[in-house]
Length: 226
Image 1: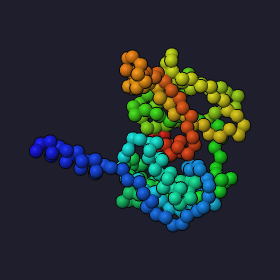
Image 2: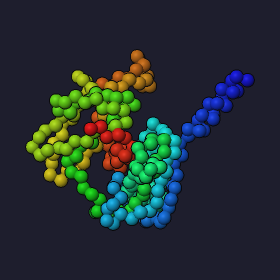
Image 3: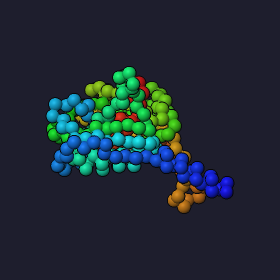
Image 4: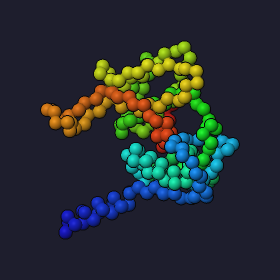
């Protein structure tokens, strides 16, 4: 009886906290072959409002969440989105709630997206805070957060994650260079499924280039760290 009760509670808990992603509104659709899905402010002159996606429930699998949102958005022909902040009872803008949020969907001609040049985004790839280094400055990057920096012409920058064995990359500003997005994991230990002796894989640092669409989504649901 106890086992049955425990199983029932577990099932109910999973059901209550399951994540749902659905098209909350569809005002119109647009036919296009655009594969990208970029973040905009929504105030762009020719941004055509198509509808809205609502996310209910939390999941730490951001890749899966974005994939589901992307598929829903493409049903309307959207190639852009903006975050729809909630309003409090007194009419003020509420804080972002990772358990419940909405994204407005738009179509914007590809040549009219706002340009962001020589901007560097460093996005946390860990569930826990981590230490990274940008030039000579050590930064404690919090879980589910990102930092934004401007690259200056004539200056060389070095980004590193981890210590001696960590990844390091050089970054420089270039004329007309679009924004750069990197996911950083400073330290990671996981099970080794390769069959090698030991059973563990240890990474002291890893830096991954992110595609703009997915990076735009992470920047939307993560907190900017000043």
